[in-house]
Length: 112
Length: 111
Image 1 (cartoon, rainbow over the protein chains, first blue to last red):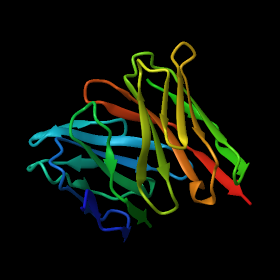
Image 2: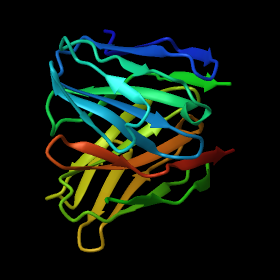
Image 3: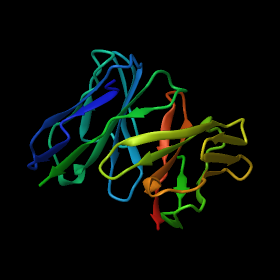
Image 4: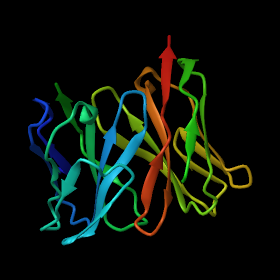
């Protein structure tokens, strides 16, 4: 019973490097979300998707890109890593917009 | 935009009740959620309440909603050490049901 799976769990990047954070869900959920959580703060929405082929910006999208080619997967890409992107990233999914969101365990990303 | 506020810290003795409070600004919120986050883990959905309800009870958890004051509370009865965590209030707004989170309340349970 996997739910929402995020990989990797930890990563250290150098400034200017790029990487993709992976998120997969096996619950056949239509909606998927990416959040970032900074120390002592709540979660901020980066991007979201209401179905395969459809994505939209959240509150803090700058410096990130997403794609949604399948229902199951929703990768988040950092093109030019900056220290301000050091954070914990959470992926979430829900069956519909009015249903509770289920979260993965997060990816802890440090950019030095 | 929408704003959700919580107090940062709460300390209670084991066996006492805990009450975690939350205020929000968007009167069109449809659902309000409580999530629990343990150290190094993701967010676990605890409970939620529809905006047309005043109260919801689920075992040791009681959620109270005062729509007039835009105030939400989570009461944990018989608080245990395993309840020590950060509790996030979140509300749902907009067509894609985007969540707006509070900053979280760290609950410390002492013996």
